[in-house]
Length: 302
Image (tube, rainbow, N blue to C red; front, top):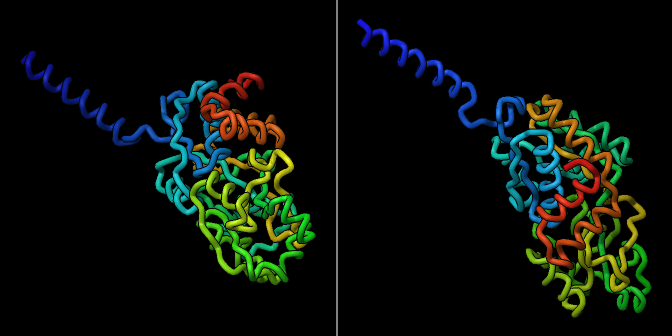
């Protein structure tokens, strides 16, 4: 009889444990920090996004949340799918670009209009956390030598020259609203050729060597810190305001400990600090994790 009771007890214990596992088999980000759940923070395949992902993860860990990173996943098409399928639960994004990608017909143009439109645009399964005052715009750039020689100040100035020139940028630029087609539609600018780059260093070298004449960068890229390159003005606001904003699974947004940690980062972040962080990685060759940890410590968030 004792053996039967023991066997029944063991069976009940196994079923209880099995029931727990069924509720949360992967320890995903849908549970609270007290449950020991892990939040995976993803990033796009460029330096700043990787740094921000490490900052977010470090801020979460400082609040007792098990957070890891999965960085340099790829372009927006790739990491948004990872967010939707649960491979990641949080990713740094940019307000204007995200809205244009999700809803290209949105009339929102100012930073305030974009921030108001985003929550509905991303839908019920995803959530927008607090946008930061820190911005990082896509920008079209030429060398100072070419700008001086051709009198280039604005994208408008390219209309009678681009047909003989080559535009360089990441492969996904070709399909973006502010990419080659956008330049044609908004500024009547059509380049002879678009050349896709996966390497920032190669793109910079080709621009310096006049193999391409115009290239896209981010305004916080370390390469733009000096006076070698000129950023062309965008008077028609083809490129929307791009404030740093965390995009999260809806379940993460319901976790007040997590959102408080991330929103504190957003409140502390500045554009000048983004530039300095990028320079530390791209120029000083430090790891994204190290510069993120240093920034968090300096802000009292890590």
